[in-house]
Length: 230
Ligand SMILES: NC(=O)c1ccc[n+]([C@@H]2O[C@H](COP(=O)([O-])OP(=O)(O)OC[C@H]3O[C@@H](n4cnc5c(N)ncnc54)[C@H](OP(=O)(O)O)[C@@H]3O)[C@@H](O)[C@H]2O)c1
Image (tube, rainbow, N blue to C red):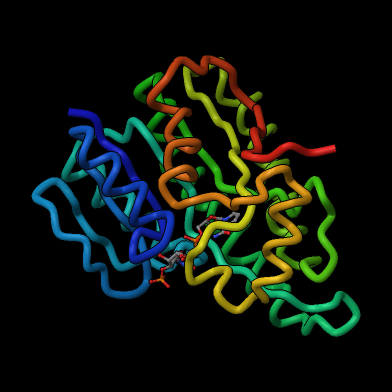
């Protein structure tokens, strides 16, 4: 029985990833703050704020108590906000860093220790094409995801000798709550810019992320984007 821990499973991409894993026979532990509607015999919901280190440690301990191991961690929980840089409230920048970067950091630390003991495991961190594009209006979000990408590379170097892979995957706009506040014209222009004029469906996004555990990738420390950049 393969065991996955996915963060941000109450909706959007995280929920779709959890459903895909469950369909493939995985047991999935899902972290989110709010109620989780996903109902499946192999799904375990945990009420966790990933920005709260103690809460993450306690929840990961509960996962290990129940399932004994974690084969896959997907750091998907995230938040976004569009603001021009000079008008971005510091509190907003702090919140994005706390959820996007520290959330991934806390989960990676807690689960990484178990994976090192197992001498096996895969960690997939979610990032965005907004990082390589240095997208205007997203300074705080881009900074938090750039930190996630840097964390991915260092973690990959440190954990590779212990049999643990760490990678990041970056997406363009996908229709979830995260992008609903952004103007349709803006999203369409961004999709053209990344060579995906028809956009990216939730199923395409799930398929791209799932390549990290469904296929053959043996590399570590990579950051792959579902986009044509440059
Ligand atoms: N959608 C896109 O266009 C797009 C593009 C590029 C990258 N991404 C990345 O993909 C990931 C998923 O995005 P999405 O579009 O699915 O977003 P979403 O629909 O807004 O869902 C975000 C998920 O994260 C959870 N979450 C947020 N803050 C949390 C916290 N402090 N602790 C625990 N869980 C938390 C939410 O659950 P609760 O609110 O219940 O806690 C929810 O389940 C994010 O990392 C995002 O940056 C998305």
